[in-house]
Image: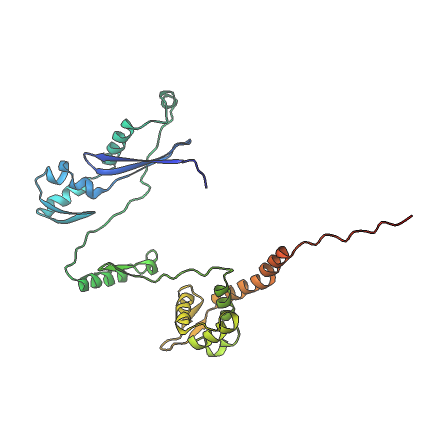
Length: 277
């Protein structure tokens, strides 16, 4: 990791945009990024307040406005020219890596929108209404992006479907992979009990039922196994069998022998006896 900073963050408080920042690289071709919040632009005195529209502000949005139609019209006016004006004000007070000779030679920045986030502020008066909205939104977006990574925040509780990774080389992980690659559960499937039996042999005789439930969930979320409908039995997927078999063989045939050889103490060669004359 470099100990020399290659990017610098400059923070601004703008009369029209409020808090914003500029990120610039100290090396040619000096790329730069500007980040600002359209909600803050709308709330500034030169926008809603200047138009005489009362509103109740949130940290990142508007909770309510007295004249929704006027507020909607003001927000619709926001365009690239406002962002360019903000950037122009920032560049006027920050050190410019391009000299006048550089600009006369035709060197300058070309600007584009790298990332645009559009949000719809929704305020719910009861958790059940938030859940209803969430379920409807998920139903409308099942074919977009990565719905498995969508999470719901209600009363500061986060509900998602993420699981810790399986770290190759760690004894519990290697024992778990060896258990998945075993042939014994191809017909009858993998259960909490059979997993405990395998892990007791490969890793820890005291491997508990709770640990097995935790590892079964990890394996399911990683695609190694899938639950048989209406049962507590799991079936190893084709992907899971390939990955478990590959990494188990890699450890037993390559990694462990190589580490064992490296760890073996080097013995000095036997001295060749000098013949007597």
